[in-house]
Length: 398
Image (cartoon, rainbow, N blue to C red):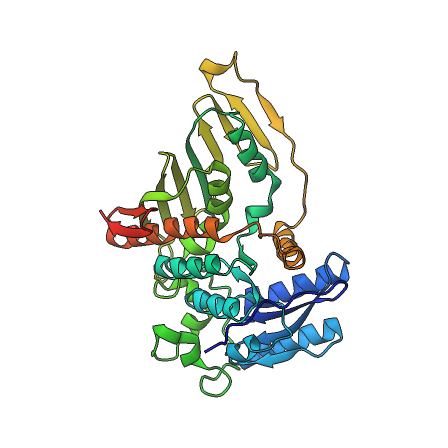
C-alpha cells in the first residue's frame, strides 16, 4: 500500500526528477528522448530511477542513463519502492497495458505527476477507475502518451469547426495501416539472458493475468495476444483516433460496432485487420480502419454539411461541398512543422509539471478514446454492438 502524499513541487532552476516504470522498448526510448531534450536545452530533467521486473532490461537502461547523464540512477524491481521516494516529481509509465491503471493510480496517490503510455488502460473498467482517481486529485498532472495530439493541424481543425468552417460535422474517417512479412510486433526480440525466477519476475509481470507457464513470446510480444492487449485498436488506432475525437468534439462515444479478422498473420491471436464504426452523442459517426496486413489506409478527413476538411498533409485543407461553392471559400490553413510530435508531447508534460497547468492529452479525452477502444474490442470478438451511457458511465451489449 502506498501512503497518500502531496505532490513534490519543483523549485526554480531545479531539474525535474523523473522515474521510469517499464524499461522495454518504449520505456528505454523515452529515457533516450528525454535525455536528448535535456542536452538540447529544451528541458531540465534528470532520470533518477528506473524500474522493471526484468533485471536484464533494467540494468541496460540504468547503464545508458548513467553514462549519458553522468549521475547515479537507482534501479528497482518493485515499483512501490520508487513511489515511496519523496524526492521524485514524476513517473513515466511504460509498462504493459494491463498494469497501466494500477501503476498510474498508485503513482498519483504517492503524489507523483504521471505520463502514462497509451492506451491509457487495457479495458474500460480500469479506465473509469483511473478517471475517477485523476478527477479526485486535480493537483496532479496526468498525461497520456498519444503522439499525434501535438500536431497543429488537429488543433486548427477544432478551431475551424467551432467557427463553422464546414457547417455541421457529419462524419469522419481515419486509419492506421501498415504491413509486415514476418508478423506485426515480432520485431521485439527474445533474449536468452531472460531467466524467470532468476532475473525476471514472471509472476509479478503477469499480475492478475497469472499464473501461467513462462512464455517468452507472450512476454516480449504481448501486443499479439488478446488477454494482454487489444492489438491494432489500442496500440495503433489510438494515435489517430485521439486527435480526431478532439478535433470533432462530438461528445462521448455512445454506440460502437467493429469487426476483426485474421487474413495473413494467422499465428497472431489478435486480428490483423479491424474496422470500427463509432457513433457519438451528437450523432457524429467516425469510421476507423486498422491493418497490419496492408499499408494503404483511409484519407484522414472530416465531412461537414457545407464543406469537407482534409487532414492527410501537415495542413488543413477546406473544400466546399458542390452546393455551397458560392458560400464557402476553398482554403488552406497553414500549419508549422513542429518536428517530432512525440518529443513535443513529452515537453508539454514536463512543462506542465513546472507550471501546474493541465496536460494536452488529458483524462477526459483519454476516457472517451477508451470507450471506443474497449467497446470496439468487445464487438470485434463477439459480433455484437455496444452502447455507452455518459450519464451513468456504464456500458452494455445491445
